[in-house]
Image 1 (tube, rainbow, N blue to C red):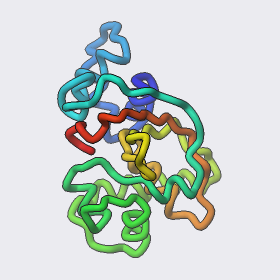
Image 2: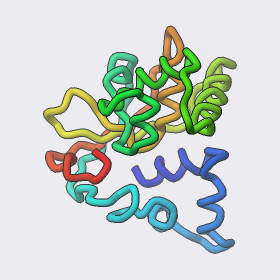
Image 3: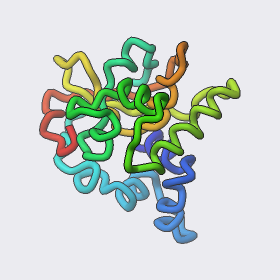
Image 4: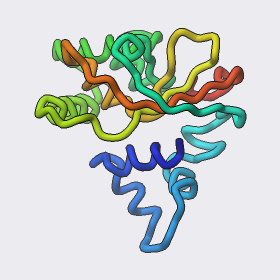
Length: 174
């Protein structure tokens, strides 16, 4: 999960510089990089993140993408248009040019969509987390790629890493 997270963010024009700032021309492993940029394993984005998460690799078909939610941050809630934070609602809002204060997110999602339109496969894996009993998953990494993908009438099946823990609702951003 750590390597996929770092790979996804290092390939992003928005976040690449944050990783480069942490490297400072020295050899650094992925966990150290993720700690420097995102607070892994127990601060920042990973505040109160359970330590018993079981990770599996697989694919995320369209039906599952429609049930995904953004992490609990105000900007994603606003983009989705409700406290439910459904990713498919945000993709609809962007397609319909609904006004949103964070233009940078909109521009990035549209740029990613253009890459997908050119028939290039989505880059990297999206990372999601959930409790075993939930019928939805929360996006941990890949929010913009999933949103861009949902703007198509026939979205790509995405490569995914899913983390499950009965304690996932203790995570600060659940």
